[in-house]
Length: 404
Ligand SMILES: *Cc1c(COP(=O)(O)O)cnc(C)c1O
Image 1 (cartoon, rainbow, N blue to C red):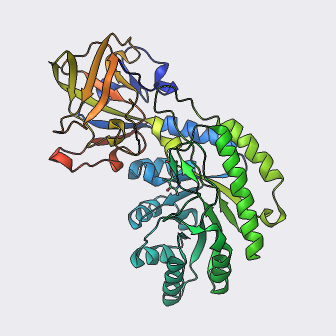
Image 2 (image 1 turned 90 degrees about the vertical axis):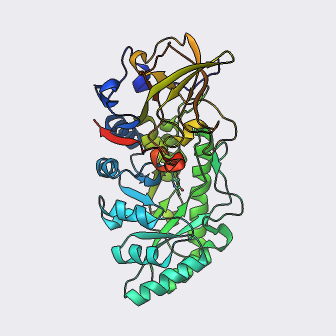
Image 3 (image 1 turned 90 degrees about the horizontal axis):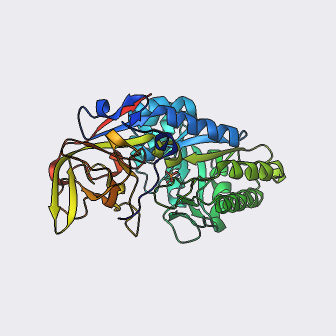
């Protein structure tokens, strides 16, 4: 038997039939496969952030889960939405005013730049070339573009699953050239919104995040001094992780908040008037999502038991270990009708795709399951449906339901 991650606390406290937002999993699973997102859990995460970071804006990075009905519900809980494509910009504009939206990401096409400039969303420019195009398009449109400079920081987030700083990068302008770019966009009449500095993702070590935030704050102050301009906003990045795997412990956000509060209280004069934001994706939504899939076949092969389900990596790629992980480890899974039941049987849970990659659980311990039973895959609220190859093998897409 191989270990799997722990169920999120809200589900680990249950017994018998799994319930999601107060309703039995079996009822949610009338049609499978289905993702169910419990908005009560999302709201609890947002409240926890507010309590820990009273003076910092909360942004939601919508690529974690861009489902329009979820965006409608999350928009009032956050101060801003961060998008990374023209498509995401459209979705964000449907639920939030343009002044609360910022658009990052390399390779923005002219049409995307125009969409942002026309609407009044902030463009986080990723290069000098992109800034020049935005300025030229703004001139053509007769609108001063709102531009923030994304900085490729010379710090990286220690222990993060995805490092995005401290190295050559398609993201952001190297710190050494960022001040010059700020002076340039201000001189050319842009509405300069400040800095965006993102150093990594999926960090569970509070100490590492504290260190990175302190370095980010110092970098923003140094660049602002060098540019001779005080930034209206400093987006400090995010990187708050969630515990996917056995042995992972939840991030101590209260510790991070206390340290950032102290650092902000002592911030350099050039940042005195600035607002600060933290942009979070998975930390807000991952634990709220459960992917429910039904057992279609139960088979034995050379001493191993397989539960073959109607859902797989075409919907929930990350649980198969093929989305940004080097070593495959098991996400938390459960038999829905006995959610915290003892793992008396060792089984592999596989999907219907004709590839050995399609494995949701590798030799996990579950209570004995039969054909027709529902298997729940947890941590499915972020980088699930929208980050999986839904067209691969031609099965129907999963349903997605917002609950609570
Ligand atoms: C992907 C991304 C995020 C969200 O990352 P999470 O790990 O889901 O919190 C935030 N900001 C930027 C710039 C990103 O690219």
